Amino acid sequence: MRRMFLAAVLAAGLFTLPAAARQTGAAERARELAAQMSKKKHEVREKHGVRVEKFKEVRSEPAPRSDAREYAGDYEADAGFRLRLGVTPDGRVEGRGTDPAFTGDRRPRAFTLRGARVESALLTGTKVFDDGSTENFEAVFINRTDRDSPAAAGTTSFGLGVLYDPPIAGDGYAISRLFYQKR
Image 1 (tube, one colour):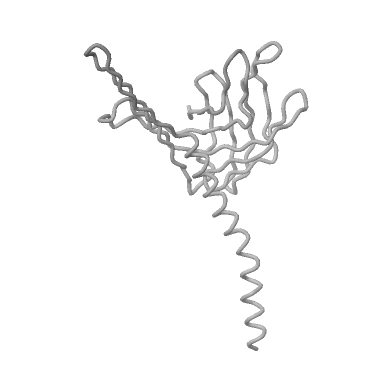
Image 2 (spheres, rainbow, N blue to C red; image 1 turned 135 degrees about the horizontal axis):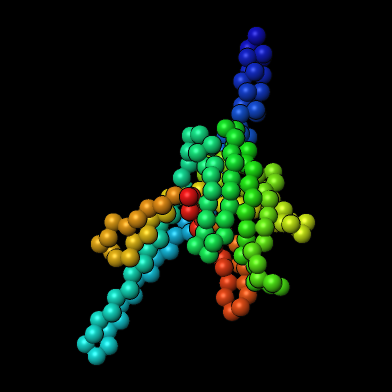
């Protein structure tokens, strides 16, 4: 009888451990990506008795939701790039969007998300572009707080932080990250 109980306990542990480990891994990866979306710059210059102070802080924190469907909606980045997501209660995601492009005609590249899932604020999947090419996709749903002064409370907005590795480059500059704000 004890052997059967021990076997049942071990079997239960084998089936629940991978799901728990996967969720912990997703939460940790979400924190890593959110940290990469954060930045801080504080600079003070003084010249001829004139003091000029520049301050900018962007703090990003993962935004996990108990109901994955809360992530569904339309998102837009500053440059006009868009992303539309549909999310099921179990975390499966369907989506369409555009990426910046600096080659050829410089029009945004349209893509569809395939095999996408959201878990612990981490969105993963594969981008399939209209020309048939594919690219891995990894992003994090975040609460982003922008401050322009050390004394300011800042403004917080919800959206999706996308990191490009390698950065999308062209015309003398590169895009390594974009923030798609939920509309």
